[in-house]
Amino acid sequence: MSTKETLIQYLNEDLAAEYGTIIRYSYQSGKAFGLMGSELRALLAREIADELGHAAFLNDVIVDLGGEPVTTPATFDKPESLREMLVRDEQMELQDVKNYVAHAELADKLGFVELKLKLEEMAADEAGHARELRRILKGM
Ligand SMILES: [Fe+2]
Ligand SMILES: [Fe+2]
Image (cartoon, rainbow, N blue to C red; front, side, top):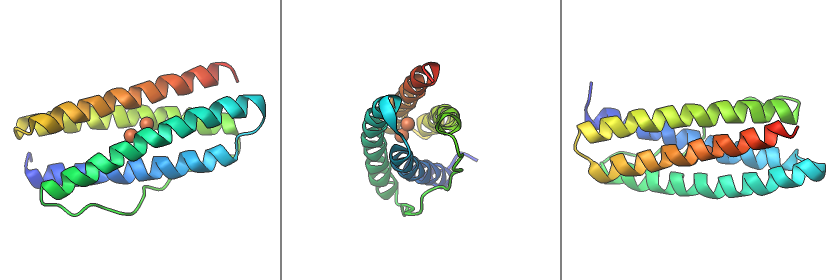
């Protein structure tokens, strides 16, 4: 079903995921120690800023489409080791890429040109986050 309501529902899932990521990265920053931890904290701070931008955009678009934005974050696991956290973070970023690409296609089908391009840009942002996480993981 390719309707505006379906698109609003997907964008709300994306918004909940963004909120979850912001909380997850804030939590993980507090659990990052030492020399490696300081690089990770800087990376997470940059990514949190990006995710806040994504969430702000999604709020505006959902309202513009006539929907009601969610305010509840997606839940997430809290693995014991920092390495395991980052492995899951990378997987979740790659899942976000897939979601944004799929939702961009739906936006395109419905004729929302700006939304299509912006969602593709956000997919690229998430792919960049995954790449930066892989860099950190290589050094662990
Ligand atoms: Fe994001
Ligand atoms: Fe991200």
